[in-house]
Amino acid sequence: MSPPASGPRTPLCSVVIATWNTRDLVADALASLTRHSTPETTEIIVVDNGSSDGTCDLIRAQFPEVILKCEEKNTGYAPANNRGMRAAHGRYVLLLGSDTVVRANTIPVMSGFLDAHADVSAVACRLVNPDGSPQMSCRRFPRLRDAVATYLSLHILAPRYTMKGFDFHATQEVEQPAATCLMLRREVLGRLGGFDEAYTILYNDVDLCRRLKNDGGRIFYLGETEVVHLGSRTTRTAPPEVRLEMYRNILRYFRQYHGQAARWVLTPILTVRLLAATRSALAFRLVSPDSEGWSA
Image (cartoon, rainbow, N blue to C red; front, side, top):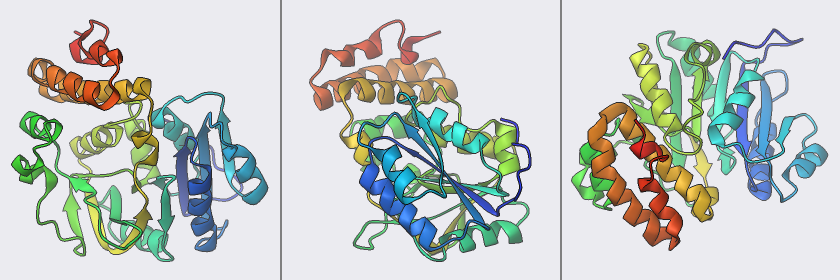
């Protein structure tokens, strides 16, 4: 990903939101952004993934200042975000979920930390539920044993991975915060090439953080600000075909970073889990030769 040419202005931050059939949610996200920022300091880029709920029409009508890119079909979370990142002109790029509401100090605190710490490549902040309770949004990079415990719903056996006892109000260095609210230096994204688009839906942020760390970058969680996150509404209501792609992404990650053992250990676990979730024969495609988990 090459940095875009300089435009008429260089905002401090470019906010990139990928959305798919979340019209009302993204409207709330954009309302919070426009309320707490100005076009002189913040540009907002929305990439709509072929929504059928009128998302693009609403944004054009209610938020004309937003840079809107409407795909004809759902290309996946990672490709949509990459398109938004390529259009960004800001010193920093804030990846933001369409189901979020930012606070007044969110962007100033995050960008201010990057201004003050030249050795830090990216920052995240506290994600909270609408009632104010914190969400566990940071993880360590998962080992194969962590994946087995997680996808057998035995999270209690992976306290290192889930960072049990995490202090939500303390600023600290972390390995893998969620990309629901993740601000990165644009030059770092350019060097890394953005998301690996093979991870269309899941584990793209885990892979990005891992490549960032391997590149010598540092990532911090900031306890001084927060973003309301309404949850993964899109993935919870996803059809079997989309869920199949999600599970293929999981297999791809562990196959890439943990070798052949991952395909043998995780494929049967994920197949059964997907079958239970979808009650669809599509689950058996995870064991087919063209599935990422079984590819050479």
